[in-house]
Image (cartoon, rainbow, N blue to C red):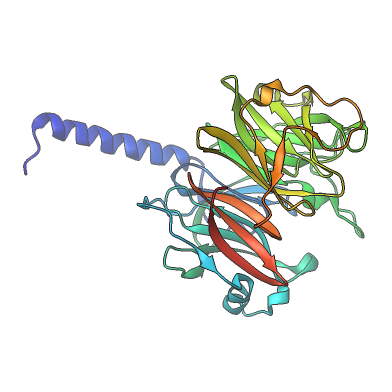
Length: 362
């Protein structure tokens, strides 16, 4: 069927616009090996761009995965013993595999894993891709289009105990042309949130964050955000952040200016002796929820319809604020991420055997 003059023109304009957009997302990219020193938190941006947090090098690497073919739907995933399969692929024992993060490409629905091959300072960073058929491959960095930006004022490496350098980047999310990066700095208020325009040019000092910690009964500035979700409250962009032991805090994105000292609003205390691992926001049956995986408290489902109505917590307290319930049929979840609007992807530990499977959102 022949195109009319108008439709030909429209097609040409669409094609030109697509080329322009594709070019804009890879502005400043070079082709080669980004020489990762570690592979930690992951996040996806436009056109299949994968952001990799390299805390050891204090860098963020944006990689063009060339994985931007839309999938008709997300596949059902059920892979038992994925750590054993990763170990076989990399030629090591399962005990020498650490899966640091799991994310789904929102376009292709392929799953990406950031992995440490080995343990300790000599561990080798690896990125793996799992496609809809279940085939797992290592993402080659030999000749990959990429862009690197350094994190200023990263904490110094300290031998022995927990090395604060490893918390330079604790989580990332791409929102409206900016990469939000949580972690630590070497500044007086070491808890830090950075907003980095993408494509990368440079990174200013982030905003220092102060919160009231309900379990500890004091204001704190040195604990990093462990996990967060971008969230809209009264038509304004916020992040909802969770910290160890486990305050839940709202922070306006408009306050995250370079060098600013920002005080978050603690709207919930979810209990001591716990480290939040991952959280996602979703809608179900006309209501808003946040699903959070934790080290000690299991998976929690938080009611998130009207987060602006909760009074700030400013005194030591037991669990209080935003109501939640335990999702008891999800045990030992180590990573949690969105698969599509109705399903999540979880990585769980079954006595040392790691299982990756999709679940309906509760």
